[in-house]
Length: 273
Image 1: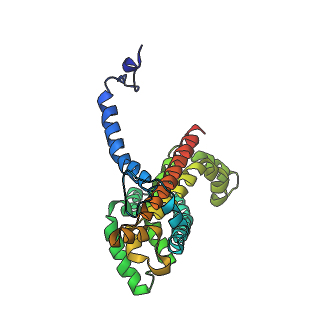
Image 2: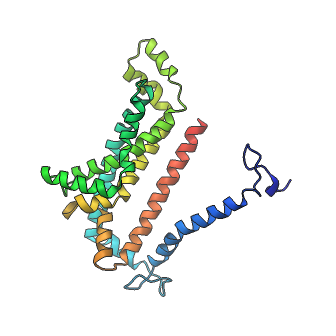
Image 3: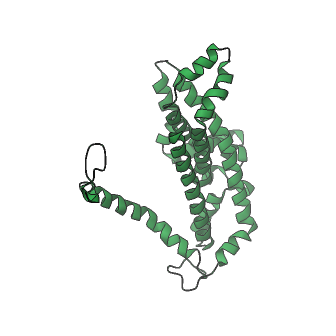
């Protein structure tokens, strides 16, 4: 039996019958990846302007990025905010997902939908509301303000990822531990958490990535010494075409791709365990 006639799923649909789906998926992937395939070579150009294909290859703009105090300060801010967002959103996401998982209240579904609202509402509306709210309490252009705003965006992702991990967990194991004298907190840390640890780690990585790549809220509520890398990139594109952006974009693509691959690896490992 050749590859085309082999079943592609339990429904016995063959790979040949799914050929149109494979072609469509390949076209979509090409359209998504094409901009990246253009930006990466541009980052190695020696031209003063964005040039594709590069007439001269050079590491000039990587050296410009690494040697710039402004870009390094913005990068440090983005890493700091991303790390703090991860520390805030991940525990809150785990607690919320666990509470919804063990709860038998009729309002559980409504509460879940409420918690993931930041994924539904356009980010620009959240940014505008956050900007005006922070203006009243003096939190604009602060690290704390950025972390809180980014945590609001990362929290729904953490809840969904941890909820998915809990869906395959047998709660009776924790109930047995509690029947033997363990408190709910102790039973959670000793029994439940080790079994959903891959989901928790994945939620943490995605929370960091959500904050690190976010630009719209950063444009509104970050500035001065606390401006993020993405805000500086947006300003550089708006005010002048700086080829340094291509080098930074390439680095961010590599970092984001590595984190996403790591989350996929942890997810598959968690399913095997």
